[in-house]
Amino acid sequence: MMEESVMNRESNSYTLIYTTVVVILVAVALAFVSQTLRPQQAKNEAIDKMQQILNSLRIKADSGNAEAEYEKRIVDSYVVNVKGEKVDGDAFSTELAEELNKPEAERKYPVYEAKIDGKTKYILAMRGVGLWGPIWGFMTLDDDKNTVFGASFGHSGETPGLGAEIDKPGFGKEFIGKKFFNSDGKFVSIAIVKPGKTVQGQDYVDGISGGTITSQGVDAMLLNSIGVYIEFLKK
Image (cartoon, rainbow, N blue to C red):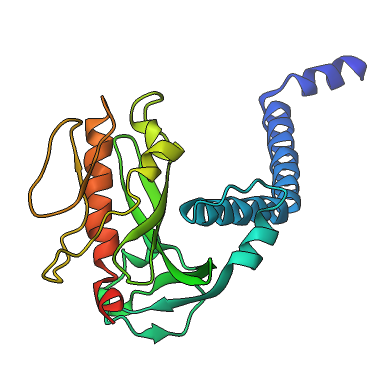
């Protein structure tokens, strides 16, 4: 009987059943862990987003005080349609990347308002594509809805030391004081140029040295992302 039992354990059927049971148990364990950790992951993602928004306001916040600073600084938030009209929706949960994949008439664009030294600032979301993956950011405009007060950028996998430099504070600071509309009131965006180069007819900042593709991605992101807010900015 013992010899038969050993033979059964060495059979293909036993191996298949044993493997299947192990796979099911591991899958159940992973699903349980994922469900358990999901609330904390969602909270971490929200705090990270708050930090990015605050960075565009030139306010440095860490994971410990981001929520408090966000509540203190952001006085209003809403979504607008392509006509610049406020519509139903929640700005914080609206992801621009998803909205840009919808028909234009169905899109909703998040807007945040902050008060800095008693003056209103408008924070707009941005989304684009770099060399290796998505890039994103937030652009804060003064109450004229034209002049840049601050900017923050992020990426998912740009080259360290090159394109990845867009998430450094120094890059965002280059945009301060730049304008998206020219003196005739036409939206021309802000150009990203090779260091040392210039461009006529619009404000510009130096791109990342050695990060040409990422810089081009930021240039396109500014044009396309801020461009969807044109009617809102004109109001």
